[in-house]
Amino acid sequence: MSIQHPKFTAAAVQVAPAFLDLDAGVDKAISLIAEAAANGASLIAFPETWLPGYPWFIWLDSPAWGLQFFPRYHDNSLAYGSPQAEKLAAAAREHRITVVMGLSEHKGGSLYIAQWLIGPDGETIAKRRKLKPTHVERTVFGDGDGSDLAVHDTPLGRLGGLCCWEHLQPLSKYAMYAQDEQVHVAAWPSFSLYRGGAYALGAEVNTSASRIYAVEGGCFVLAPCATVSPEMVELMCTDDMKRQLLLPGGGFAGIYAPDGQLISNQLAEDEEGLVYAELDLGMISLAKAAADPAGHYARPDVTRLLLNKTPGDRVVPFSAPGVEIEDGFEALQPQRAEV
Image 1 (tube, one colour):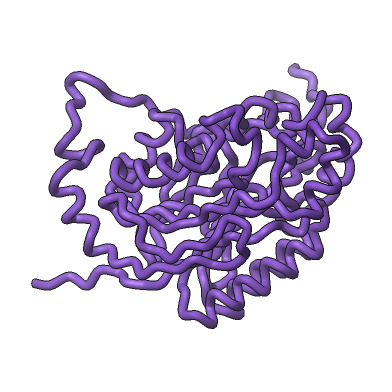
Image 2 (spheres, rainbow, N blue to C red):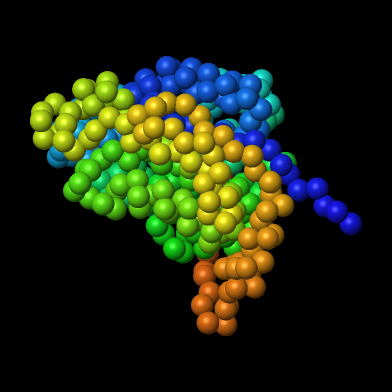
């Protein structure tokens, strides 16, 4: 018996965001969604926090200096259920394409580095948050929880995603591999920060992390990567020192096969556009025949992973004697005297 494995075209974004402008960013995203669909793509992946852009200002000076940008960043982050979110879902539905959007999620007074997986019917497949923001990202963003390490069944295969340096967290990666992930979105912001001063932040390390994820996980990896526009540099780099810390460009988007090879076209690092590749999920069994780290190549008698997938709800309403839940809040009810 011959099994028909999914085969489809995928696209990864290498485009600068409409920085600090959510409405313009949504319009730009819809244009890219339409372009990818017109070129036959069934899946498009966006970079980390592409809406409304990665907050590079946190890396350029003190937290107090960076606060000047925060109100605008907060107000232009995406809230689920908002008109802007509905426009994105409608675009996925109109063009019959699966979208993995990288966003700063606005929830109440807090922000989260997030990925929103939208199906070709416009319905939500999943919403996830970066488990632990990296370094100074913690001055802006909150944490995710174990429920965010999840892989989802879709017509395109088992789909999951992680953001940026989550790909340097061995246990988080292993948790994803163990869920039989087939198509992975590795969302990156851009690689144009601290060049010559922090090798670990450069393209060499981070593109290698995407490639290694493909080999270790035996899966396809889409690695969207934004560029930094000259306008972003002009806005945030207010002196010569800052202009040395953040450079224009930094786009290194690619798509990797389960054996680690780059299978997409490439763009110059300051060039905007989409990179494409044909994905044949039938290749995965061949890659895993050699090594399946969460399967036949594992030694669970020696090392095992504990994964707590309980959602980290901040408030959990419950009823106690004499207490009823009204609109998510506890309301005291009068007690009847016992006779």
